[in-house]
Amino acid sequence: MNTTLRIARGEWQHLLRTRLAVTVIVMLLGLIVVAAASSAQQLISEAQTREAYQREAEETFRSQPARHPHRMVHYGHYVFRTPAPLSVIDPGVDPFTGRSIFLEGHRRNTATFAEARETSVLTRLGVVSPAFALQVIAPLLLILLGFTSVVRERERGTMLQLIAQGVPARSLVLGKAAAIGSVAALATLPLLISALWLSMRYPAETLPALIVFAAHAAYLGFWVVLITVVSTLARSARAALITLMIVWAVTTILVPRIAADAAATLVTSQTQTEMDILIQRDMRVVGDSHDINDPGFRSFQDQVLDEYGVDSINELPVNYRGLVSLQGEAEGSAVMNQYASELHATQREQARVINLFSVVSPYIAVRNLSMGTAGTDLINHQRFLDTAEAQRFELIQSINTLHANEVHFADDSARSVDHEAEQRTRVSADFWQRLQGFAFTPRPVGERLASALPLILVMALWLMAAVVLINRVARKAGEV
Image (tube, rainbow, N blue to C red; front, side, top):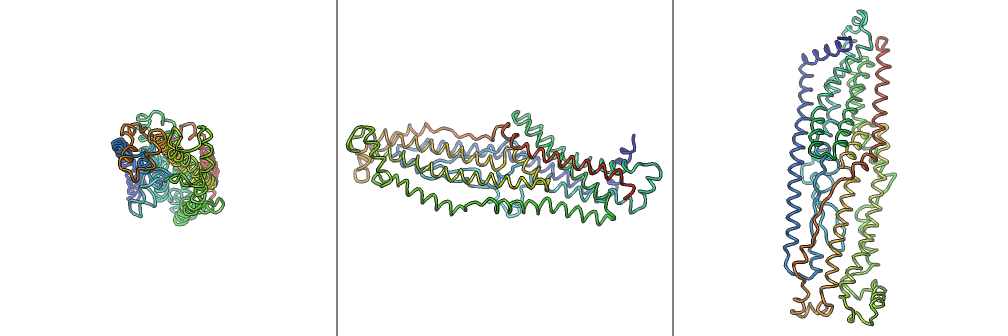
């Protein structure tokens, strides 16, 4: 057995004799195991629940009786997003962004029923998942475990004795790092098991799952090296602990907060109220599709009359009210989509600004790399919103098409005063059976990995810098 392994074994024996160290190891492993198990159970439960709600919403819509088409436009329909497979490791922004959207005419609604809004304030600080445990809690526990690893030998005077007996300073430092690293490796074992389980359950997610595991392993490896280096350079255990706690607080809490504020300042975004006001302003230009005499549809009426070669809307072979509904929905959706696209672009630009801070905070690098690769980041949430909007537009326009083709204009005009005409404007319930099922999937694996490539490079640079640093410190450890 070489010297480095002997030092590592001796450090392990010391840890097992220390009550605090044993407590920290048990807490670390217990937290990650519980987080992984509970996340897996929650993934299965949420997937089943949301699929059940989706089936119920579709059955409720399809079971509606004969109605006027425009009543179904306002009746609306719910769609639910099933969790991404890798959300069992990293739920990302999903608990904060909502999981269902109500689809209705004339409106592009946002997601609702966010998990974080339905739970306690403490939950909003962070969802206890394997990713959160490894990114935030594990470095803190590793600090408590290893901050005395090298400096303890110096304070006791045993470091010079070991060197005098022929133990290379390099082997001493690397052995200490290996002992702490073995604890970190144990901490990542539940994550590896989760990644392999997900790979068997969802074969398409094999590569993303392994990359998420590798990213967290590299992140903990960085912290192992940093803890060892600081313990080597520090003059006292107290100084080592204070230094490491400051580094943890700055990189994990302070820099992410600064990054978010910088992104919001450099890339300004309209508030939801401001956007709603602008949308309503532009919608007034489009016109009210409930009123066929609205000035916004005068040119459209002339266009329709010219297209069908008639002089009056009463002579049209289709229901002009339905045509106005089709046109109004198309123009209104274009307005709403324009503002949504601008908002999404702004949010993506803000995310890019935050990613720039990954060069000073490995926590930002691993957090955003993990979310992006897992398919639980902001871009995938936007994908859900856009997919739901496409479903909404198709649904509403199919109903408006029924309005134009299945309801006579004369009956439609008289339905508020003529009961028989109102009855004739109700289309058969068979039409509601045409509702298409909703299915949402995260971005394709290739797109996710391409987007994550810059952060993968940043993580690699952090790890390389740590390896270079510990080698330099290890060579000079005997002089410190």
